[in-house]
Length: 454
Ligand code: DC
Image (tube, rainbow, N blue to C red):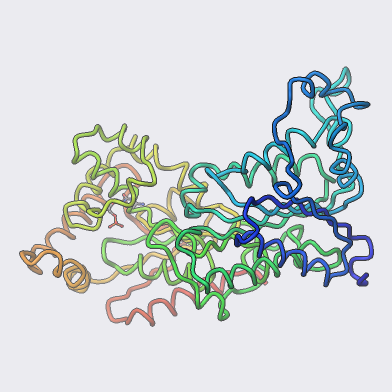
C-alpha cells in the first residue's frame, strides 16, 4: 500500500451490460489508478452478478427495519461499511442513472446502513455513510454537455448531491464525463481516459488538487490539452465532454463577460478564450435569435422566450441578417429578457468558469464578473466582416445593406430601455478595428490573465 493512501479503501460500483463497452475501459482505468495509489479495492459489477434492481413489496414493508432490511444484499452492505471511497462507473441514459444503478440506490442505501430515518428529534434524514470521505462519478453521455445541463443532469446530481449528503461532511467529490459519445473518436476516448486517470488522483488522501481547495483557479489551462480542445458551435463545452475535475483547471466560478455591438469580434474572442482557458461558452445572442425566429413563425414573444428549448438553438436559420433583426426586436421586450435571465446567470456562475458574450452581460446578467470586456470596431470594418460571413449564402447581399442593417440594430439595441447595449463602468474597452483575430484574442487573454487569482 502506498504512503499517500494507507487508509484508502475504495468500493467501485460498476454498471454496464456489455463487457466490451467503453465504460469497461473507464472502469479499468479507474481501478489501475487506484491500485497504483495503493488503495484496497472491491468491485461490484451489477450486471455481472445479476443484481435485481427492483425494490419488492416485501422489501418496502421492511424498509425501515434495520434488523432485516439488508437481507439479500449482505455483500453490498458489507462493502459500504468497509469503504472510505465510493466510485460509480456507468453510462448515462436519459440524462440519468441506468435503471440498474438507480435500483442499487433503492435497494442498498438502506436506513440504518446508509442513513438514519427522521425520528421524534430529527425532522430530516441523517447521514450514515460518515466513513466515506471520497465520492467519484465516471460516466458517458450520448447527449451534449449543454443538453444534459439543461435537463438538470439528474444522474450526476443524484450521486454527487444526493449520495454526497449522506457521506462525511468533508467528503471530496470528483467527476468526469465523456459527452456526445455517439460521435466520439479514438482520440476523444483516449483523452477522456487520461482525464479519468487524472480525476482519480483527486480522491487520493494527501493530494493537493482536491475539490476542497477553495481557490477559484488552480492554474491557467493553456497547455496542449486545452489547445487541442474542440468547441461546440454554441452554448458549449468542448465537444469531447470535458466536464472533468482533474488537472489544472478553473475551480469554482469565474466569469468573463464580453459585450459589444454586432460583428465587433466579441463572438470570436469569446470562443477563443473559452478554448484557451477551458471554460464553458454561451453566445447569448443565440437565445434572442432563437426567440425571434419562433416569433417570426407566429409565436407570441414571451411564450417563445419562456418555452425556449435546446433544439430551438440548433435551427439552421439563426445566423441570417433577418434573424439578427428579429432578435434585436424581441430583445427590447422586458419580459422576454426576464425569461432568459436566470438561465444566463446560472450559466455565468457555473463551476469551472464561463465566458458569455452579448449586450448586457457585464451590466445586468453578471455585474460581478471577474473580467469585463467591451469589444468595439468602426462601422465599416464591422460591416465588411459581417458581409464576408453572409455573402456566400446570400448572393443578393450588398455591403451597404449590411452596414445599414448593423446600424439599425445597434441603434435599437443601444436605445431600448431594457438592458441597453453599453459598456459596464469597469469594462475594458477593446477596439478591434485595426487588429487581426490573433491580436484581439491576445489582448483579451492578457486581460483575463491579469485578473486571475494566483
Ligand atoms: O450577438 P448577436 O448579434 O447574435 O445578437 C442578436 C441580437 O440579440 C442583438 O441585436 C440584440 C440581442 N441581444 C441582446 O439584446 N442581449 C444579449 N445579451 C445578446 C443579444
